[in-house]
Length: 481
Image: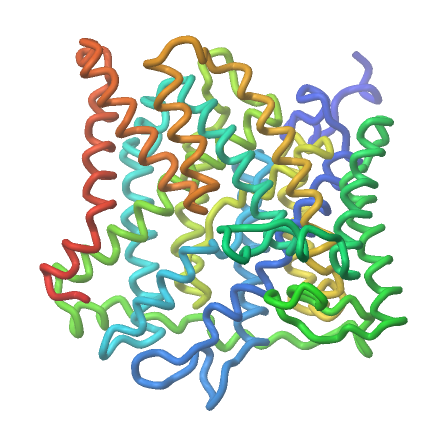
C-alpha cells in the first residue's frame, strides 16, 4: 500500500470504512440524531422550571430561568456526546434523561430540599455508577443477560420510541372513554397533524426508493411545511393538549438566531445538603431509585443502538462496552454538576444509525450541534415535534424487526421476552420493561427446573428490581414520603 492510499488517522481510529460507513453518512447521522433529540432543550427546562420546597428556582431569580436551564442542558449534552464519540467510538449521544429529570423535580419538593440538594443526589448517583463500572460489575451484569432477552429489550425499545413519536406528534392522544385515541376524533383535522403525516409519508416513500438521507429530508420537509403553515395561519400557541396548536415549538424564523448563553446553573449542587436534611437512609433510597432507572435504561439503549448499527458480535457483545458504560456514568456526574439532572444515553441515537451512522463521528457531530445550540437555540428551536416525531416512528419499525430473532415457540423464551417488550411502551418506561423481563425470566427458568443455568447476576438484579418496584411502600415505611 502506498503512502497516499494508506488509511487516514481518522479512518484508523474510528474504523469508518471497516464498519461500512462514510464521513458523509456519519455527519448526516449525527445531524439527524441531534434533531431527534433537540426536543430535550425544550422539555428539560419545562420540567426543571418549578420552585423547590423553599420557593427558589433553578439557576436563581424570582421566576423560572428557562434560558439558563436550556443553555446548560445543551452544554452538558454537547460535551458528553463528543466524549462518547471520541473515547468509545460508538454512535450514541447523551442528554438529560426524561423521567429521570422528573424524579429530581419530585425530590426537591421534599420539605427542606433545594435544587442544589437534588443535583447533589444526581452527583452521588453518578459516582456510585462510575465505581460500578470501574469494578466491572456494570459490564458483568450486561454480559449476564441472555441473548434472546437482549433482542426482546431491543424490540420493546422499538415499540417504545415509536410510541414516543406518535405521542409527541399528538396523533395518539388521551381518548374520550378509551385510554388513547387516534388524532382528533379519529380524523386528521389540524395543521400540526398534517405536518406529521406529510413528514412520515415522505420518509416512507424515500426509504422504499432507497434514497440516502430519508430521515433528515423528512424532518426538513416537515419543518419547512410547518413554517409555511405558521406564516399563513398563525397558530402561534403552544399546547400539547390542544391538537390545533404546535406541541412544543412554534416553527417560525426568529428575529436573531444568536443568543448569548447563560450558564448560571453550572456548579449549583450540594452533596452534603441531602444528608443534613434527610439523613443517610433516605438519601440512599433516593439515590438507589434514580440509579436503578438510569442503570438499566442505558443497557437497553446500548443493545438497541448497537444491534441496529450491526456492531453486536455473534455472542451479542458490543465493542468497547466498558468505555460506553464509563462515559454514560460520567454523564450522570456531569448532569448533576451542570445543574440539569442526570445525563444518559439517548435511544433517539438510533435515528442517526438508521441514516448510516456506525462510528463515534456521528456522536461528535451531534455534540457539536448541541454546543452550537447554546448560542443558536432560537434557530434550532424552529423544528416542531410534529416534524421530528416521524423519524422516531420509522426507527421504531427498523428496530422492531429484531422480533424475528426470538424463538416464540419456546415458552421459556417467549414469555419473558413478551413481558419485556409490552411493558416498555405500555408503562412508558424502558426500566420497567427490563425489570419485568428479568424477573419473569428467572421465575420461568426456576419453575422449568433450570435454576442452575441462570447467571447469579440475573438472580441479583431480579431481586434488586423487586425492591425497586416496592420502593413506594418502603419509602413510606422509612418516613420519606
